Image (cartoon, rainbow, N blue to C red; front, top):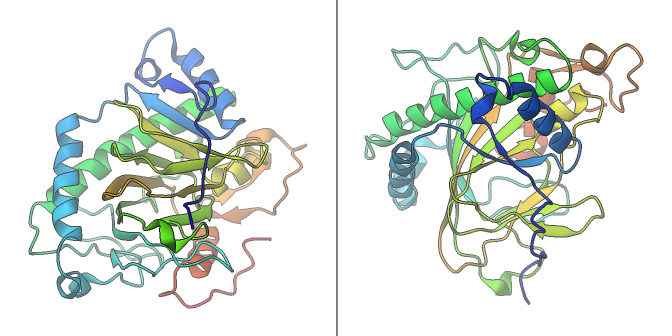
Length: 328
């Protein structure tokens, strides 16, 4: 059986936006308006001018590959914790009922202080687990986290300006963010697995915003407004940014959280560097705050922390089912 297929992307399907002018200068509002418009379409954007050095991305990739090519016995020493930190083994994630388990595996970490500790004030925030047999992974991962998080902050300022809000609106409660980063490894996928097997099955991202650094392999596919799947190939010098479920909820559905998936039909390994930006757990997600009192949201208000707990419980086998009704 062949792989799940997707058509080639039209050049204007996912815009490429230069982020550099957003930091200063007369074109700030133009960039913000472009981000705003793209977020109301597919909710996927290529960004250039992001400022993350090539060397930093190369160091992260090199360390990540050494980790993933280690033995399962070694990686099992840092098996994912209840706080979602460490190694998530293949088959440990399932995006929805009825889907096959994903082929991917991940290494996940979050922000930490200078001594290496994290305040454990939420069920999805805990101390990072670092592989002592790959000592270069820790500095490379933390450096990339800081850079990608800076990019996410710039984007959130841009979205606020595009929505005609105060520039810091989305960052007012982001001093203790639930943001997490991951290196995501996709093995070469055998076509005999069938059309219903994926590196990661169709899903929308859980949180506010995702910043993705693809490699040259390709395999990312996005569902368009007609329900068709299109390729989102790597474009040199860019990152891929996409709206998550919480930002869609925060804007009353004006910004689109779009289903996407990965099919690694390349015959070689694929590695992604991912930053999932989320503010503090107590942050209230209420479209009335962004779109006005007349906003008619599809979902009730929730908090960032409650919503993520509900979604994680559904997606990851290592977590017990959570009974919160944050999804309503």
